[in-house]
Length: 363
Image (cartoon, rainbow, N blue to C red; front, side):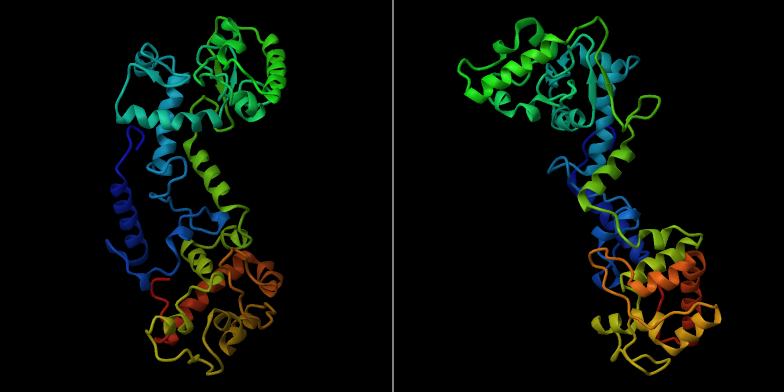
């Protein structure tokens, strides 16, 4: 994936294998075996998921997977930064890397051309000789990219391939159409003021980004996480409760299912037509949903009392939008996250041994 664009069918096949192995331990999983939607599973922990990489997610390009895109950006980064790369030196002799246009053609190069705007959007440039910096699309001025700050002027550009070096040599007016709107003319005056303060040198243009490691390499994992966070919005309220403790991964996973009411309780099994009723067979006092298992059942209440936690009877809320546990859960159980999350596993093992009709297998 870091060398070329992979076919879409390959990503779908790999994603299907991952989903099947995760939920069923087989090459394929069916709907009833998938307790949580795969789009939720592949979110980061702080976004309510399990952090599994989504191999079939497209953000930068409709035909290119996100992870594939992030890895291919390393090739573009090498063109701008690697002084000891024979491939980068060969490419720089044949193309203008500010626009990725030149004597190189092919599907692989077309993919890199489509990803160039992404690389330009995550980097800022310190001007040296100005030959590898696009005047319109790169962030080389403190005010930002010219296409964003001066959109009217950018819409009058005769060409969008001009570099900073070329504009300083020929003048910005030579890069525009003859007639300008009133707003574009005003923006032209401001841009000319910025250009008057720019001084070129003999050094190469230097790129920097918060996504670069100290040695200058591009951290694609950080970029992937950044895109995922931007995709799914603010963090999930129950993420800290589930993951910020010393419980084993198996218990944490069970807690993750619990706060989303996706454990294999009889209420959920009834919806899948696996059992005939949802009556709790331990206390015979109500439907066996997630809230009943952990709060409403007499066995659950005796368990919480035995470990010294006063827990009010309260069903869990639905968490389809990552709302997190209900107030009683936060006020009582989270007082000791490590202990309580471990208690989930104890209840699970106790119930599995006492009641074979409570199938937690696979949770």
